[in-house]
Image 1 (cartoon, rainbow, N blue to C red):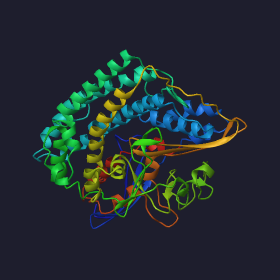
Image 2: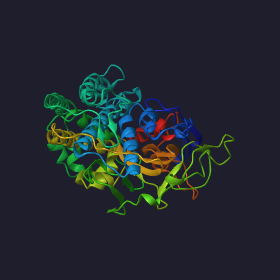
Image 3: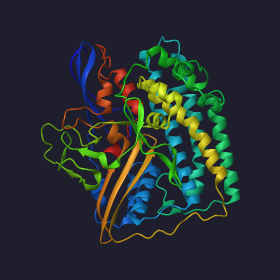
Length: 476
């Protein structure tokens, strides 16, 4: 369509329910409104429960990022208790978390994002037949190989955590399983097998060579593996200019270790890194079907507006930091961490940048997992003594695959009195705030091409999937 209003959704290959209302003029999106149409109420479920119940309940928010939720809950409980994980326990917790995030990146690339390019609308493109062979849903050769490699990588979670998803291995103070030397050898074999898969199939070359790329020009000349096919498609369809964001990025810092993190914590705006002040985070409710007033998550509430008042259009709140919206995710992590390629990609910040940022982090995290495993000392203690008080408050801030995840907890007389969660998709898919400023996805969709015969515009689908929404994490 060239003029009018278009409702797109529900989206396939997206975790949860999502609708996007588009205003279109002259064949381009002029405004977008993102709706999370399903309220789930996990924050309400937690009220009155014992504090340790958060470790069981919050991972059930999502079956894809359950370790991220578990890690955030454990850190919030630790913060309330004034304790911390044992050094070796923190290593194993980080390794578990890395495995989940890497598996998520791989799933996004093979199952959520790339299958769009096998569609008939792209027949006749030089790359289309290769995309069909590799990424046709349920049939593509990349799908089969990727699923097998992911399953073997998740053996590590089975060994350390007993099961995936919803493991209870991560606790305040550390982890429940102390790996032996034999366990280290088995996990090392799993990591070597995953590296072999990445280097043979995804990247078509050494991971260190991909990590050494320092410019968009060098990236586009990679030309190997499935990453090379994606880059060829991206150049042909001009995905670099599609879905550009506001250029503001947020990371809570990934994989805490002895007061530091493997990937840095901070904000990126106006071309520079800035310190992150969590006290400046607020949740705006002006366009959400929620009752209450704008508040910091530690003082926030989850009270659904059953009347669904006029002017609101989503169950998702609008997180803002210092009055600004921020994009979060793998690209944001690597921009804040200062990787040269991520910084170069952020100059455009579109679909190409987000997906290439995940590929970059996939390669970088493989090396980080190998180093983390090598440093584990089986003879050490993997659990510190952490005693929870009857009254207190804490916060747990981690990086899920999709970005910044925060849990804010308050306990009174041994029971949860408040529990607020701000998920990555809450940041990225937020509605407008009181000033009418759109969320990151809403802003990125402006300018997207809508052709006359498109009821579900391909440009819109590419932009949405470049953010990899997990709507079930958004509407607690």
